[in-house]
Image 1 (tube, one colour):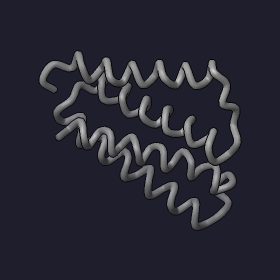
Image 2 (cartoon, rainbow, N blue to C red):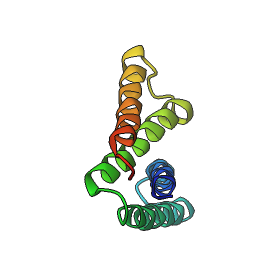
Image 3 (tube, one colour):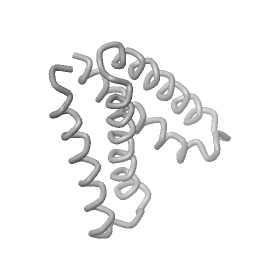
Length: 107
């Protein structure tokens, strides 16, 4: 269950990271509130996940999910570059996340 909570925390991390773009430097009230709410939820879920998962693994996966999702949405929503190299390195992060899960041994 902790892994599901951790992935959900990572999804909320994506939400607050993307929210930063929409909030225009936290100057737009509605996107700013959404960003702050997503940040709080992400942190609370991460804190719950680390009750059962090693902090190093949980933090690496949390940031990895956030990085992959935010980079991918940056390409889709904000017309950021989608070069082969960039997509390949995003894939390397995904491999790292899967690898950490595989070697977590019962956690």
